[in-house]
Amino acid sequence: MKKENRTKLKFIADQVTTVDSGEQSLTAPLKRYSTAFRILIIIALSVFVAELIVMFLIFALPPFSTVVEAFIDAFLLIVFIFPILYIFLFRPLILHIKERERAEEALQAKTKEMETLLRAVSHDLRTPLANIDGYSGELASDCEHLTEMLEHVTADEETKKLIETLAGEQIPESLSFIHKGTMKMESLLKGLSHLAKIGTVKLDIQRLDINDIAQQVVDVMKFSAREAGAAIELETLPDCHGDEVQINQIFSNLIGNAIKYLDPERAGRIRIWGKVEGNMSQYCVEDNGVGIPDHHKPKVFEIFHRVDPTSSVSGEGLGLTTVKQIVERHKGRIWLESEEGKGSKFFVVIPT
View 1 (cartoon, rainbow, N blue to C red):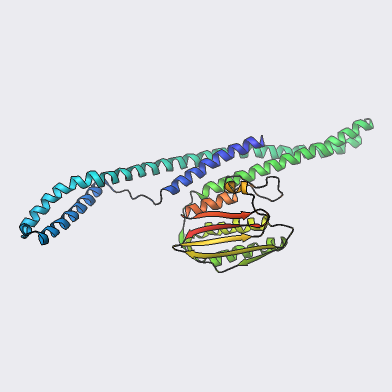
View 2: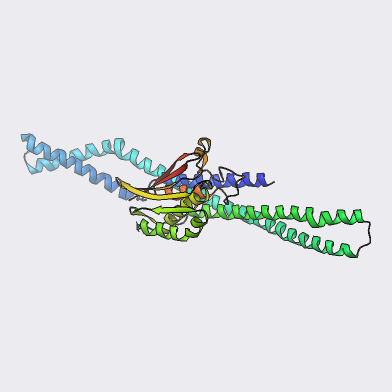
């Protein structure tokens, strides 16, 4: 049952992330010019091209020496050039713009559809989960009362022992698994809802002091790092343009993962560094943790993927998916380098 619910959630999440990546493929918002304005642009460009030709002819050929002849020739050239430019240059461009507009409208419609579906599924799953958890709590309480009542019930010792085992051990243990399962599903639903919001929330793009943002994240995680026996080295980082809240989340997730997946057999070391390459700022969160096996590397950014599902490390497999979505919304990219048993490097590139 749990596996089936997880599969359904993964399908919905894939649809949501597909919509968002599709939206990112339209690299910039389209300006919706009116048809009349487009025609004016075409005419203006046609006149400009015609005038350039006429100016060349005036200086190059004697018959085009008078101004009157020049204007007449310019008019004839405009009449001749306009349809040629329209057929071979402007018409394909206009058709391409219209196709982009239709694609954007289809993506927006699909985004709304997925958001509606996500809300409905989230509501429909949360309601039975609340009932399951609530009734599980009542059953646990009833088991305690049943165990207390056994002291006043006349029965042979074997029957009493069997009831005590059932009401005091086996049933509470099963109810504990049910409670953990409902809490896990609740956490998955919250994470999925958060992931969907990241793709739709309006970005507040501004120039950011990444040194300040990274230092805030490191300060928040100092206790966790100390508990894990890790030293965090924060080097000078270049600025970039982005949404402060979401860029903060990138560093929070990457540094948090670095702390969680340290190797307990050696002292942990986490290094955060960056550099500028062209018009992009590159950042790296490097650790000497357990590393990632080669066969897991292509999947680490997939929804709900965990390198070791049986691990005691907390998480739902949504962190790196969230980071990837944020990076792509900022027109950047993310990749990793990792060697099992030696550590990992996560690289993020954001426009400077």
